[in-house]
Image (cartoon, rainbow, N blue to C red; front, side):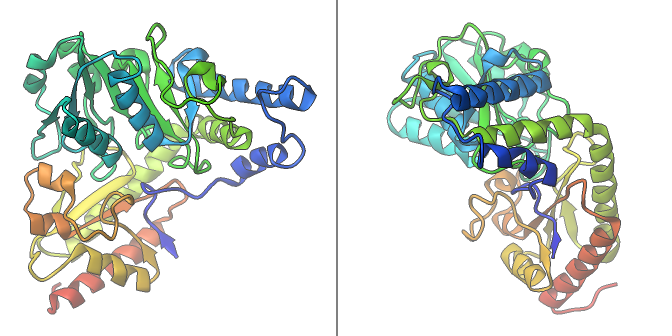
Length: 380
């Protein structure tokens, strides 16, 4: 199989798995226990917390472990509104992940004011839209790097326009791929996850800026500084830290490989497949994502392309894995002004540092053949 869906998840690195195994076998203690095996688990967790905090230029006390990006996003939005009562209104980007959009919609349905901020044809929020929101009772949530198109929101610039709001960013897709400094970005909350950077599934983290009165949304214990109850999954947290260390150490090298593979895919698709539109900009995007729509959408469908590619041994997607197979047009592309048909007839290629040039050559040749067959005509 040629795996080109690394935005959905990544293969766990061998060294990450090896780092986890002792905490599943010998050192399986509960980190809240005071005997030796529990104390060792606590030390491992706090060491991991320090590693992840350093990667974000944060303080270790500002990192709270969760089960992943979805829990982190939900917790931040709901706790800010209810348990902590930091804000009374929401404003979220139209191209956010559903882990932000759906909680915002649910809160709006319950009577909370929740604005959906439109984007331009590149997927960027118009900074002027934020001017009327610059109040301390507003939570603004804007994704750092989009999971479908890879476009990067200029968070630091946007933050300058809304210096009074509570500011959150879902950085699940960008963390480990490009530098993230929470001080430079000016965020109050940030969401990250392990399985997008060759770590294990089932673990993520929230950055919560020091000084914020953030109460637990999930009760049942005093873990994570009374901010997230539940026994910590030591092996997953250790694996998360191991993946972060590797990502930070090799970030420039991996980004270079990713950009080369994506540039090659863009060149081959443009050369061999007529009537396409690239939804990922050449500049200002994450290094590992390429999203392309096929313009004769009346004759072609993204799901059909994905299924045909799968039969041929290539894994690609049409956007978020959370809604894959729903036959719905991409809400991200719709927000960017694409038609419903074009938003359905889209494919996302996402690579990793282990993706080879030959895999891109083979996958793009297969894609061209699939599209020709679906269109029912031969183009050269």
